[in-house]
Amino acid sequence: MSTLDELIQKLCPSGVGYTKLGSVCSVKKGIQLNKENLLDTGKYPAYNGGITYSGFANDYNVGENTIIVSQGGASAGFVNFVKTKFWANAHCYYLQVDESLVSNRYVYHFIKNKQGILMEHQHGAGIPALKVEKISGLFIPFPPLPVQQAVAEILDKFTELEAELEAELEAELEARKKQYEFYRNDLLKVADEYRVILGDVVKIKRGVRVVKKQLSENGKYPVYQNSMKPLGYYESSNCKANSTFIITAGSAGEIGYSDIDFWFADDCFVFDCPENLSSRFLYYALLCQQEFLFSQVRKASVPRLSRTVIEKLVIPVPSIAEQQRIVALLDNFTTLTEDIAQGLPAEIAARRKQYEYYRDKLLTFREAI
Image 1 (cartoon, helix red, strand yellow):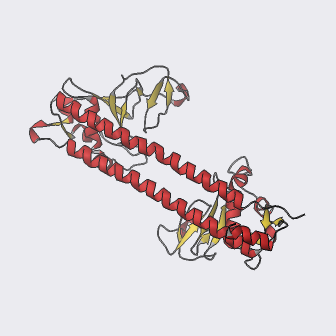
Image 2 (tube, rainbow, N blue to C red):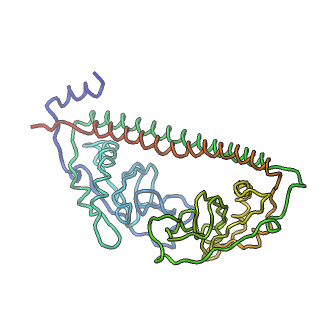
Image 3 (cartoon, helix red, strand yellow):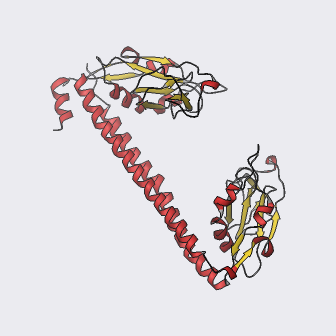
């Protein structure tokens, strides 16, 4: 029998009572912080919702180790725990817990377990919001304080282990990406006699504008305009499969490669390669210069990358046989990296489900008759 089971058997063998959350803590709403007082850097984080802070303030209105719940916006109902002093803004609820009655961390784990329910209770036709009564009206199991503390300790450990695992998985992915970039850049280092100016060897073609009302949400031909995410789908294509392209507005500097036919719009350039230059090889060569391209983007209301910058890029053009060898190696490495990237969210999701299952079990008590 575990320590927790022993405590339950000793202190509440006949079950536990349930009470409204509002009877053991009070739910307060933050105070509006004027925009001019919201700083890029400062002593205290300022929360205007539950997910993360929106800036900093030089003062605070709530103490450390406090449960907060997002009051407004798409995140309304999201639950967080702030360990430092902070400023609670007008779209931030915070809970003041009577710790002589209930464990603060026990309440946090309980309300975090109800986060999905709270988010389902968003109301309002415009900006979604959450009424305070939806929080204070939750019924919380109310075992003796030592039982609450034991449950909180177990769940805190679970949370800590989950965070450590996520950090390890993300570090592994980042290491693989860096390894891939080093390997790619090393493979594409060739002698100066193989280097050419991009505009001298390829035709750079600008796309043809389409408007969103002409597009559908799914279809045969994706339309690339100002990001790597298709703007929509069109009834026809204007570029053949296995082509490299670059975005010149919005997500300017992003480099793409499509293995299917597609439509490229007017903020997208496609490279028409000669016989001695593989389009896939060009894609990898351009990826090596992506940071430079980002640095050349004009930061206006709509970020833009000029055609001149692209034309003046210097790229390697070794023999076709060498290009094919390099492409084959990099394709294999890309596949490995993408497999890790795709597996990471699935692994994290599986761990979270496991944690949520145990959290739900630990926070479920037989109700006293």
